[in-house]
Image (tube, rainbow, N blue to C red; front, side, top):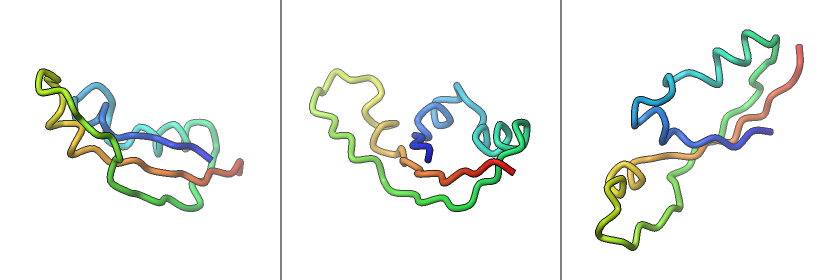
Length: 66
């Protein structure tokens, strides 16, 4: 199981499909992906990333070795 946030992708730090690429590179099979909206609560008005954090999602990957 892998829990992964897409915040890095939103900020253009990571590639959008980095988990899929790594799974392929290391001969892993993604069996299931569950996605939900991030539960991160941004309270500070001075947080420069608050809009990005509100857009982010969290994915739960079920991964198995091939």
